[in-house]
Each structure stands twice: as C-alpha cells, then as structure tokens.
Image (tube, rainbow, N blue to C red; front, side, top):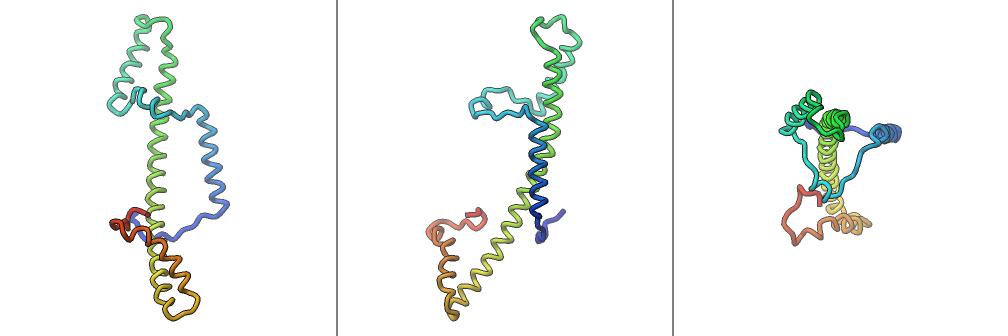
Length: 158
C-alpha cells in the first residue's frame, strides 16, 4: 500500500494481545540461541548458494550411509536441515513484518515531528504577544540548540 498520512491507533488490549503473540512465538521456539559476535564469526553460514550444496549432501548421506562413519548421525542432519529450511521461511515473514513496522514507525514519527514543528512555530509566534508562552517556546527550542553548530540532520531523527 502506498504511504499516505497514517491515522491509526492500538488499544491497550491490542498491544497486550500482540505481546502475548510474541510470547507464544518464543514459547514455540524454546531452542533459539543468542550467539556472541565471536561465535557468529566462527560458524559456517548457509545462505541461498549453500542450500543446494546442503540438500545434495543430505541426499548423498541418506543414499550412501555405508560410506559415513558410524558416529555420523544422519537423522540429526535431517532434523538440522529441516529446521534450517523452516526457520528460513519464518525469518522471511518476520523480516517483512519488521520492515513494515520500521517503515510505519519512521512515517508516523515523521508525521508527529512535522506536527510538532508546526506547533513550535505557532508557540514561538504567540510567545511574542501571549504571556506565559515564552518559557514553553524556550523549552521547545531546546531540541534545536544542540544541533545549531552541527551539519543539518533533519532526516536522522536527532
């Protein structure tokens, strides 16, 4: 869907249900691990190019079990391969959802920032004639004081 002004909200109940769904996903994946940078660096990476290699190796192992040492667990190999392909499928969906949430957050954040800038402009103008708004205008202006001496960062979210 093409981006247009976002007019949406999430109820507290919706947020609660989404968090429960996250917890359900985590409960269904109790074997998930967290790797250190060093562990990630040391591990083989199975990307798209390696998928055919692993698939062919699995077929070879299943077709020729007599050439493998008795200690080689072909069934564990099958489970690893099946889990890797299933997790890859799930990861694609999670990445799409994450991208949509991230894009929506960027868009709605930009909308909120645009509205805030409009309010700030009106407060600055009104502060010249309306008692009590000078402090508010100064408070709002604090957002921009730190970046006056730096290059423009309008799109960075500073």
